[in-house]
Image (tube, rainbow, N blue to C red; front, side, top):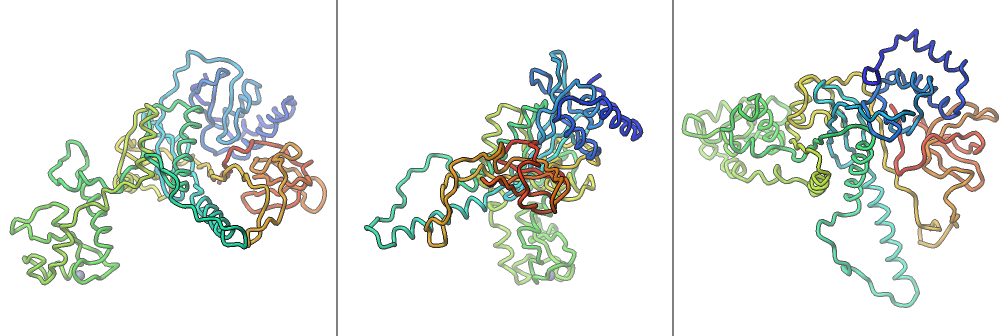
Length: 465
Ligand SMILES: [Zn+2]
């Protein structure tokens, strides 16, 4: 029964809400969660574990609410929303899911896709903190430099005094990689993931370099054309190779004409405006007076083939998980997304990565979870002023009145000028007057008495949009 999620009519849904209230649930946390799930009725699916933490098929939110109402399950995790059953399901054979990744420098898209049905079960957009890490390292460097130059004893500059281990990545890039791996691990614990897909390269150079590869491996002949066209646009900077005009429809142009034995290879192709293409006619680029075009076209595909270090490192780490791993090019992702007429977002790009992408992607019920990497706080016990002198003394204690900065909480303020219900990320003060960052802004100075914890700080903050 668990494996056939029941679609509930709105009438039954509202009934359930009433029944749940009358029955008087004993667990306080369940009441909070019931409330939240009712409001977000069109949310993507809910993860489900059995009592031994074995992952089962994700279920519809309506069914999740029923399970909670019947007292058959409890809330295991708020972000991503996960229930734990109160019984074991050792015989359950959940449908395999594929976790697809589109790693980006600022944001990584994640999508869980059921390859058999084409359904996107869950999606998230993970925002990295590379810039935050870089700027805090920069400020640390500045303070240390300052300290050396102050009127103190002479301290020699220390630099290049560390050996970097093989595969070392700068801290800002490494943090990105660790963010992604953390989420792969977390999702792996919550649902039956059997395969991974990631976007590795921007252009599939093998596909472009040998135009003879026919429809055997790549079923749609158009894909190659698509990839080639996008590569050429990139290579020639979206300008006509001859006159440099921009923002006009371009034509594929053979530098050495077909009629004179020029090949279809990408090294013999350029983009040109209609006028130049006509004017050039049956001449080579050099004869037409543009030997530089000929030279530029010959340059290797190095820039396109270069996989950035972070993606390579991620590829290696994902391979080490032992799960089936598929890679795709950026061109293929875009091709898949355009074919399915999906808008450009990070999570939809993730869902379109790789050749395994189902012909029809069911995405309309998905609301991606926005995940922001926040870090876990500072070691520093002071705040410094701009000269590097200590300004504040921070408490050694991280937790105040049962909360710590980064916890996700819900505040029901019943008195004072800030009456209302807020959900968001807490920033604690030792005085007990906390700030709360909600989706709409910061609500400052709320007493700790009004807060109810919904998710312990785990290095990330969350938002459902
Ligand atoms: Zn032109």
